[in-house]
Length: 83
Ligand SMILES: [Zn+2]
Image 1 (cartoon, helix red, strand yellow):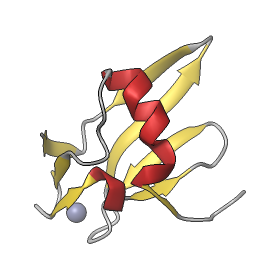
Image 2 (tube, helix red, strand yellow; image 1 turned 90 degrees about the vertical axis):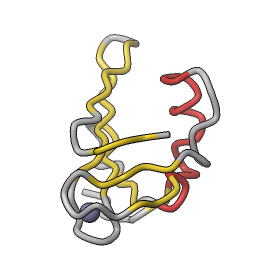
Image 3 (tube, protein in one colour; image 1 turned 135 degrees about the horizontal axis):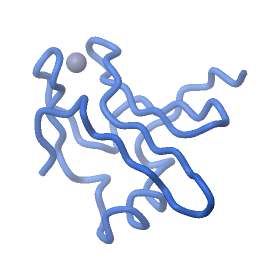
Image 4 (spheres, helix red, strand yellow; image 1 turned 180 degrees about the vertical axis):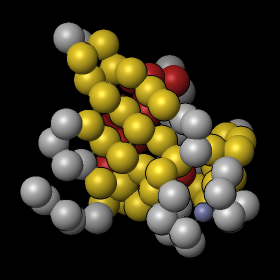
């Protein structure tokens, strides 16, 4: 397991692929602690099976990206908002 913590810039290309637009400058609000942060500043983990984005304040999982047969599935349930 690679526990290296990256930041949102590491998934800039993935985000463009998923959302169709530049998202690293978007501001996300943590659904758990309410902290707001630019996507570029969030903690990103890539354990191999997918990509996990966590809040730097409370460690809550904000976004999960999993690639299955060339389709990237996105789970944004940890985010209160993303704009
Ligand atoms: Zn949080």
